Length: 118
Image (cartoon, rainbow, N blue to C red; front, side):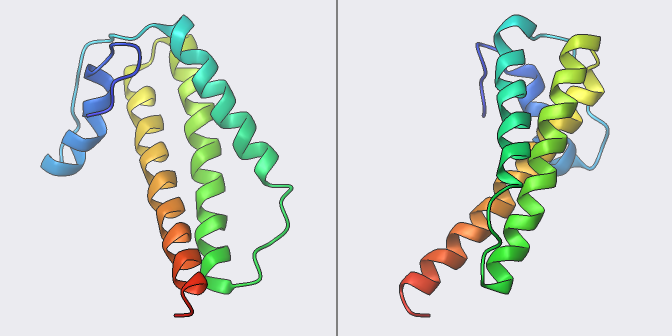
């Protein structure tokens, strides 16, 4: 379970929604002053990463190309959710973040396999 500055309620929602296939509701329990800089940094890092040179391996580039918009959407959504105290939008931003992490893991596996000569 992901805990950000003591908040566990919001971090469980995407996993529970995915597991049970439902719209999971939870009470708003977050510290915007502590979490907003994290969301802002994620959005900025994703925007900055668009300036990187393309990866000359199509499967690796595809994973990288999926990571960026998911991370940007996550950071932007998270910022909006915290400012508006919008729990469903915060949950969506966490799901987008999970998608970015999964795409990045795919990229890491591809790079590792290339380094090992596979």
